[in-house]
Image 1 (cartoon, rainbow, N blue to C red):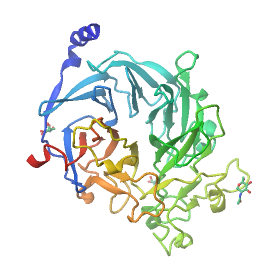
Image 2: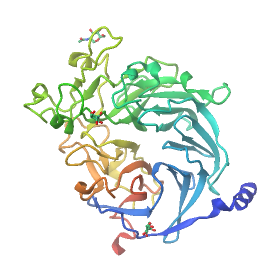
Image 3: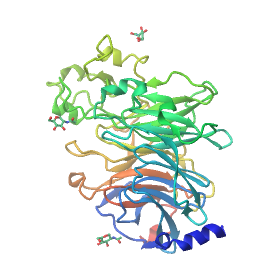
Length: 452
Ligand SMILES: *[C@@H]1O[C@H](CO)[C@@H](O)[C@H](O)[C@H]1NC(C)=O
Ligand SMILES: *[C@@H]1O[C@H](CO)[C@@H](O)[C@H](O)[C@H]1NC(C)=O
Ligand SMILES: *[C@@H]1O[C@H](CO)[C@@H](O)[C@H](O)[C@H]1NC(C)=O
């Protein structure tokens, strides 16, 4: 550790730790579910996005335009230290003991990192090159895949569409709107090339957040189940649909992707760009009458022009699961889910954790909506898992935290982006446009809740 401590001291720019004391207000008021408490850890950050947590429980946050900063609990507050200076980082971050994986629009980079000192190598090494760098969404979400012994064996990398409705994404070779896997145990020289990644799923418009979960039923042994949150397209300009219909459709989604751990199989398509999911089929019963009696979750066609396909991809095509794997769960249109994390409560919790009965459930950040009236999203939700097809709640999920006055949003409202659970069973959340990092915890057992 001494060598890295020396490095640490020799670079004064990195040791300017800032401190923020507890008790700062949210930039704009939030409403918190009963039994929980939400508090600001740090304010005035630069577009905080993906977040990971190291073995010493330091929070590592991608601040877009800055790099990666580490947040450490100090007495009555938190300290912030810049760990990596790289203004090209966009969103993705993963940690494997002493390696940090981050993404730019075109590359996945690895930095060596010491959790004891929060010092990283000054330069990253490119491990994957030539990601599709352009288009509307240049974030590339990352997810390490591990074997049964916890060894990181592969890294999954997401890619978004070139345009809102990107017809090229029909072809998995386009590299668009899909997830590719790259072995970390490869003997190939670094960097690997995007072109050589294994497509594990495609037709997912913007695969923004990933979480491995136990497979829902007994199935083939050599597979893993990955939940993926997807942002559906805006359908305002789709022929035959109306503004009232587009205000409440299509649903945003959670896809359940089955990934082989041995060998490769033909990847499933999840429907983008041709197919979308009804949230509210009765949103415009006169303008778009054909779906008024169709239930939530029904797959429907955007009736896009067909270029190379022999037949138009109409509703029956979208409803055939050979062509289009339907979502495992649906969110209200325009919620814009950006991250998903599964809650696995740790036995060493110190109090203030989320309720134990939520063990195994998933939690999703909603960056939410730029084009819905009234607005939706701007919060963090709890989704029971395995998913309940016959949920008693009207939405099927419930908000833990949400901007109190949605009519003022986006404005200064929270716009949750990244999520991570700490070993303390608390849920840490980044909010990019409000520049905040905050924590959601259980108030019942929290020692500080009585003092406010
Ligand atoms: C954030 O920055 C604003 C503007 O400079 C300042 O007024 C505010 O006090 C800062 N917030 C915190 C918690 O430091
Ligand atoms: C729909 O078309 C209008 C006018 O061309 C354009 O301004 C708008 O951005 C389009 N919306 C989407 C979601 O593509
Ligand atoms: C679904 O599509 C597949 C492949 O095109 C086709 O073989 C099958 O007959 C279709 N199933 C139905 C019920 O139309």
